[in-house]
Image (cartoon, rainbow, N blue to C red; front, side, top):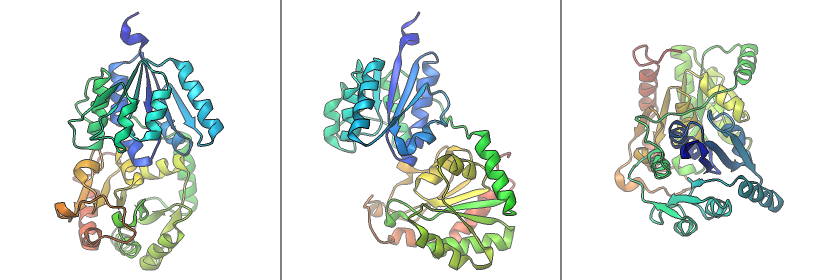
Length: 340
């Protein structure tokens, strides 16, 4: 048995939705380079259903935030005797977990790149990435572990057929056949677009294409959803707050997904759905949708601050409904649309 056959890898990426999606090309590179190796992924319990949709994983280890859950997780990791653990998160929490695994090699970003510089202290090998996009930076970690860099960014995601079928039945009962998804929420208000503009977009696409809009929001974003509905008028969007597997099915089946630099947009792009991504205080060269998507970004370089503002930023407000409509038409055109 060769050395590559006995390799075992632990992927440490605990959260969040978009960051997990941008870790997938690195995980795919590991699987391609080590087809017989064991590859496990430890992830926060909230996101475990997403990682369960990743093809090529041996085990998804769900991390509970309770003290008992953390201790049980560490005990489980140490018992697996991994040959290599890779921390794609770069926080103290993920770095300590990587260290606690007892893996023979512990790989992470160097202190100039890790989100919390001190996290690099816990690794046995520190990588200064050469890539600019987050996904490319993650691939650099996989390459240090011995993987070959892929020629493109693969996203090995598979939506369970049972979820896709359940969603089709649900939409059929609502009389919805063709739809787009808008995602007005986000972790920070400064990188979001206003709900009235999403509503206007929904109204225009309803008039021109008969497309029903699904407004994807969390349970705490009811006010955002109502703002979209108020501006959409006759388009009569549907508000949805689906669990992760259903969200994946919803995004995979959409004609188009429009949103800011947020997890649902990145998940949609990874699933092969056409997306229009709106950027302001974050840089699409670092965080843009992959493998492709139309990006609208009016910001000057000095406005790319990554500041978690509580108000809508000038850069995001500069993105007009007309710009988004034009991009949406391009994405949905016969010439550019992929086979469905």
